[in-house]
Amino acid sequence: MKILIATCSEWLPERKATLARLLVELEGADVEVLSSRRPEHATIWARHLWERAEDVKGPVCCLNDDVFTCADFARVIDVVADVAKGRAISLHTSVPEAVNVKGPWLRSYWLTGPGYILPEGRATQLLDFWAKLPWAFMAARGRNEDVIAIHEAYSRQEPLWSTIPALVRHDVQTRSSLGYDNHKLRVSPVDWGAAVANLASPDYWRPTVDAPPFVENTWSSTAYLESMRRGITNPVACQSCWRSLGLTQRGGVILCGTCLHDCVGMVLRNAVKT
Image (tube, rainbow, N blue to C red):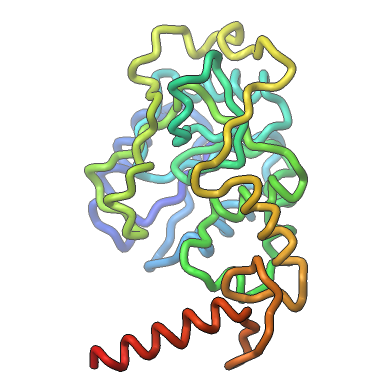
C-alpha cells in the first residue's frame, strides 16, 4: 500500500528528527513524503495530501510526521485494508469507549489526522464534498481535515471504522503544529503497545458480526451532525452556528438571533475591558 506522510519539517525543525525516525520504521515500504514549505493550516496541507491520494490506485495510508507505528506496520495495514475493503479506517483510535468494545473494530463518525486509510476513490469523494462547502463554514476555527471527513461520512450515512488497538501512536513529546499540545485526545485509549494478538494476521481483524458496534462521537454526535448537515445545505442558515435560520445579515455574514446576541455581547465586554 502507498503510504503518504505529511511533514512540516521544512519550517518546524524538531520534525526533522521525527520524520527521520518514522522513515526508518517504514523502511522497505512504499512511502512518499509531502512537505509544507511554510506554516500551513490543516485545510491546506491535507488537501495536498488528498489530491495526491486521488491519483493512487488502491487504498492509501495517510500519516503525520510525528507518529510511531506498530511493528510490521506496512504488512498490518495491508491486512486491515483487505479485511475492511472499501472502508475509510482510522488508525489512531481516539474514541474513549474503545476500551469497552469487544473485538477489533468499532464504527463511529470519528477520524483523527495522525493516521488513517482511504480506500480507492475516497479522496475524490472527500475533495468533491469539500469543494461544495460554504466558505463561511470552512472559515470557522477547528475545521481541520478530520472534521471534513466526519461530515462527509455522515452525509453518506457511512460511519468510519476504527482499529482496536490503534496502530499509530502520537508523539506527544513533540510540539503540535496546530497548537494542540494539551489536547486530551492526542493519546489513544487502546494502544498497539499493549496488544497480545498477531496484528498481521487476517484472523484477528475479521469481524465476527456483520457490522462492528457503533459508538457516538463525544464531541460530534449524530444529532449535531444532522443539524449541521441541514445548515450547510441551507442558503439562509446562520453562518456562525449553522443550526438555526438566519435573521439578519451583518458584514456579509448571516446570523441567527442567538449568535447575533452573543457577538454583540462579546463586543461590549471587550469594549469595557479596554
